[in-house]
Image (cartoon, rainbow, N blue to C red; front, side, top):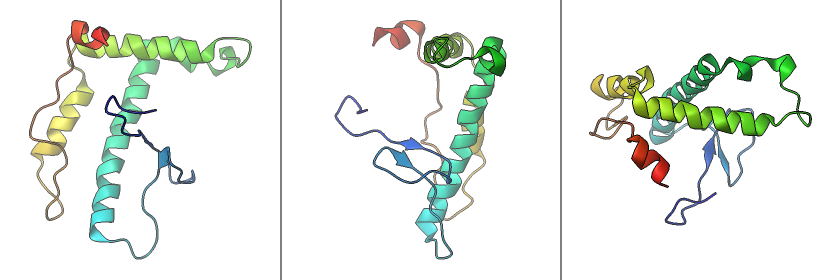
Length: 135
């Protein structure tokens, strides 16, 4: 995948996975530099928030959580997940969810490491439905 400006996109994942040109994992080892430690801490916090979004999706669309009912190759599990993600994002556009407020709290708590800036100065607001579905 690439961003609209052709910048390659990467996914941040669990340290159990190996690093590739599409997957990033935390820095590891006994000799982690200060900027690498900052990267690990920042990404860890944001990863937790992403996991909360998955939890919200399962809470809104309970059929995603029925493992016995999700039969790969017998049902369109990927399509079900994509539709749930689209509807969840629509829900986010219409309501101000708790996750967005977490980003604001992270920023307002201040810096734990010298020079650390968790989130940009602007508050994160969901787009309107028109903006979201425009692209």
